Length: 352
Image 1 (cartoon, rainbow, N blue to C red):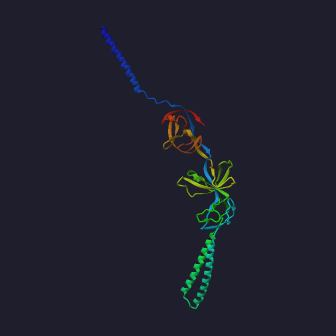
Image 2 (tube, one colour):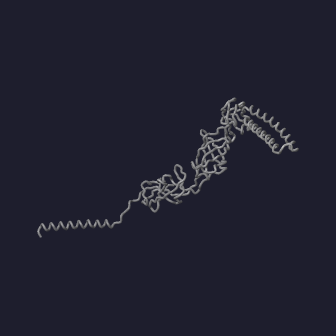
Image 3 (tube, helix red, strand yellow):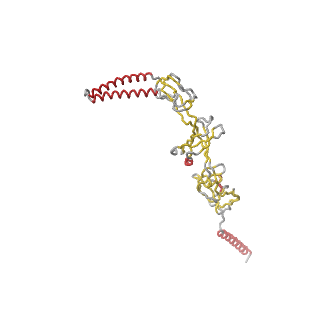
């Protein structure tokens, strides 16, 4: 074997050895079990537990008078008397204004005379009827005329009564809008009257709390610019929830009114509900908002499992869970953006 043949044999053996090594490595890699990504370390978690929560909500409202109305005349005419002093407190039935009724009084006197004459005619016809001097029909026609005149007299009396404007209830008069001698119509506002001896408040409650507000329930409220607490008692609610804003209108009677409470002022009503001892609360940062609904990441057997939940009221730190979780469930509170379904996770801390 010459030198050239020895070199060729050496090169062939070297190449065969290299090919064998490469094939062995490829076979080893093909038979190896693939390894998943390492678990995400240093995540914090929270164990779901029942808590006692007293839920309070704050709602806007307004103060209203116990009774309030505008004073309008019932008929048109000229004011001959006006007793509507601004800010004056009047009792029910007080004469506030008088409209000229001279023409009506004249009509009344005329009708009185006509009725008297017609009644004498009826008496004569009654005597003639007894001796068959007139027919029953003739007598009935004369009697009908008397009845018509009497009806006209009652109508005139009613119109005269409508010229007198009385206070409908005890209350305080508002601003006077007319002067004595003015010509008024039923559309004319003379003044207004409000009964401020007892006040009410009106406010609306969201639909979800509608069944919690019952007649007799006490509510607290305050007015702008004052720290004094006020209290009212619910007296009535609307018969149903409004379809426009899905809320229930509530009316309550103020039990400790003072001079600072004026009809129309804005108030803040605080509704306090009984504590719920079986409420599930979780940290707000554990909730993952979705396009439709909300999710949480649960820690289960070393994996992150996503679950749909429904929530209720919340505060700055905790949120109420109404569906989707049970007592004892462990949910993740950090690293939520990097989690994948069924991904490996490791917990470093359990939040209290």
